[in-house]
Image 1: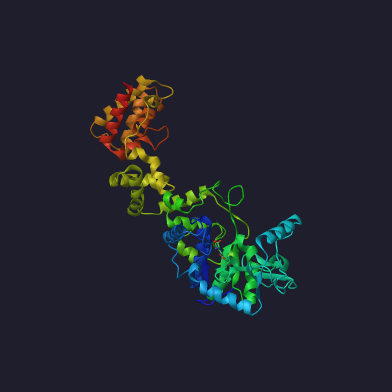
Image 2: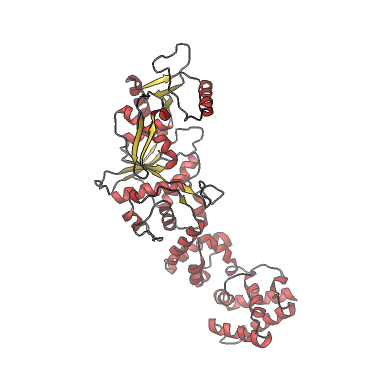
Length: 471
Ligand code: GLU
């Protein structure tokens, strides 16, 4: 492992505010943040908002809110739209040094060239003859970098993927800016990474094709590029790039569903990285900081498995004490049922710990908070009839009115007794109508558990309601 001097690490994420914060950006942010924290370095957020038409303040807000929710605090913050003078300065210098030049080719001319190259199955490139012979009868279109065709290769040692090389042909005369005030993506990135003294560029592998262009710009400026580490793609179950078809990609949906930041960090860090113990699936943020190195990042794509997320989430919820868990659950109770029932929530603790995968799943337990709605036919057990259902419910109401019958074991043995004496041992004949009366569902938590949680009088109310439905 390469040892890095403390403080020498400066990394960044450079989100474009052209869409909401998504799961891929969150993973890139997390890896950068962990790397910075591991090495005692700086984590920088740079909003790449040079695309004036597509960038929106609303998206920037969403991205920053997502980072804050995750607890990924940044040390420095920049917006490219506020850095025009920096880009201008270097564009002028490159033009003056003859390292950049004006290209006069129109969009149409470049389009024709592109179509021809596509037809010949060539990587798209443009070596511009205006470099040495600027036309006098045309308008300036773009500032380009003068790339020497004779440089055979442009390569780097990628800290994830090893040595990567591109031929100068695929790089060609990189477009830098539309004019002095309108820098383009690759150029603005390089100027910023240089001026912000970024030591490591850790980003998605979809940027690999940009890297040789950026290295060419660094060279023209006469400076050393940072180190590069390209993260594997996040894939869906069918191993194609993760999209809405596979899972929610908008980060906000995970916040809304009620996963905790610790859960999401645990899940994201395993998307393309392995802890020291490669079987470890539950990892705290602190442990991830301690263990995080680029050597353990995978080359191949990381499959996003929603079931694994839910498993991790449940494991995290299980680790919480009653107070912590109930304070997390209560807002979701309020949101779904318009009420805050501390007593029910505290009685629900053992059941929620066992079953809850994300906090908003509390909505599947609505019958704990409000009387269920259902049709009378649901009360009828398949091997019995409405008369049987009435009989079972009446018997159980009788048990409830008896003194000292309230309690887990007592209720169970009394219900079993009714099944034995009145229904020839068919437990379904008792438990089915009771379950429906209490929950309105065919599948629910255990009926006795529901009784104990909603309490004796609410249990009696619901059984009475059921009887009334059957009359
Ligand atoms: N702005 C780029 C994006 O949102 C990131 C560029 C980079 O990390 O170098 O994909």
